[in-house]
Image (cartoon, rainbow, N blue to C red; front, side):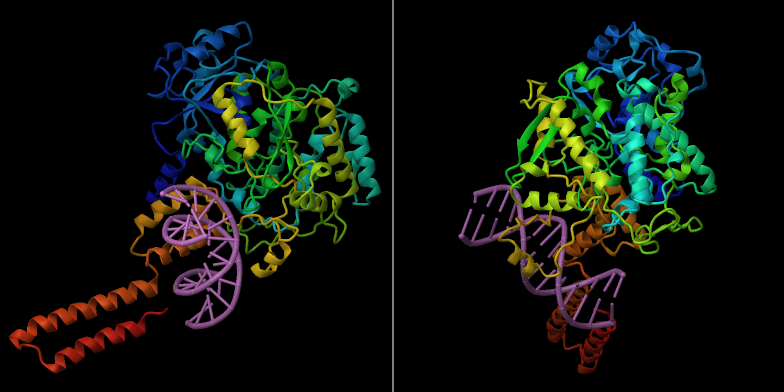
Length: 598
DNA sequence: GAGCATGATTGGAG
DNA sequence: CTCCAATCATGCTC
């Protein structure tokens, strides 16, 4: 690995001693793991065959207590690894004997469960000193495609990308599938409903939605494997992208989620491709309505208050079916070790239904924004028919009917512009949501959890659209519109990870603080910000530290002139300088000045 | 409210 | 396109 790669790896992995536990497949996919800094360092020999032992691998008494409660349940393998291991599939090693040597449940660091329903509600658990981390963030951060894809969401998203998520959210029973197919047929989008097979759905799945999110995820992973045949030789390429967007969830920084954490979906990384990796743990059948003072919008925030709620998590969880290749590897490996297989009851989508738009260039190693403009129209889609991406999540979904100010205008515009089927689904989602869940205040959760929840409640609103708001070209025009539209701040503070990444680079390159395009892209990716933000940050940084080329040169010229003046003053007493020498020195400085571009 | 820090934007230069 | 300087916009502190 090159030195640069080493550096990048170090940046991604953060503290090399940091321990991240992947409790199991399910929690991994939920983007949750626990980094327990207060735990004891006990790891029995029994587990050594299973885990990638690490000096900091830890087990808490609390975990053990939980474990003991679940001892009777079937044992799941637990993978404990360092972040760097997770970040690098090659290092993500699980010993061979793990397959034949199940862990001792008494030493199992986290709750055992073999099905989704057995996973205790995370928000009810109190892991002292634990932080919510997201190992997938680090893994996904290495894939520039993820970010590029997100950043080039210029307002139009090809319909292909909507189907998987859309379908999975709202049409998970045969009746819905049929309805959906009918709608598609009606829309004349050259839609072949046979591609949406329902044969795997049991008749009673209408009421028994037994397919959990992990089921779904692995279905997609299986599908991804099929798709992957189309793109042989493209190691970096993934058809699905990790639902990771909030850098502060990442073990890169180890920063826990707080009220200051950025919204999972921002203007810079459109929500569709970067679903909130954390909020799912707060989504369940309980909801609270919070009025955001700034926007006067109401948001539902789902908070699991019981294990029962948590069990029902997948009923409303719209985790996008996107994952990085690394995620796939991780999940597949975990699934393999646990012997877990996708459960019945969920339709398998053939690749052609979900494949990337045909405009995608497969033959280039440089998949860059500038080269490949936003999704071109391809076969199977009516020319000119593009739809705005809908963020089909019910986490923090604005309720248009209750919005009275700025946000309402925005939301209504978005929803009313949706295709009828999406509009219907969106409405239905909210309706179902309201029917299913009574509005009530947060119950007394553990303080840490409550704080985190409040963080989400108070975070910036997430538009249901991924469409990057089109800003007026003139700010003064914006001001005029302010009469009715409350301005959305354009200078949201950058996340700490992004700043630290750029700061580090700047300090290391103080003499030449001009990152290359690749450097900028790397920093953007690692920092979870856009390339534009990187550019802007460096421009401001250079300017405000008087480190721009013109300023540096001016300073150099001034210093040389000053030095010459000192020399003149000094040598005047000695009378050793003649006019010719002074002129020569001044000319040299002037010549140098003219050579430097401004 | 002033002062400051910071992020974004603008228009010009190259 | 990048870079720059100026400026705008916003939030924070006092």
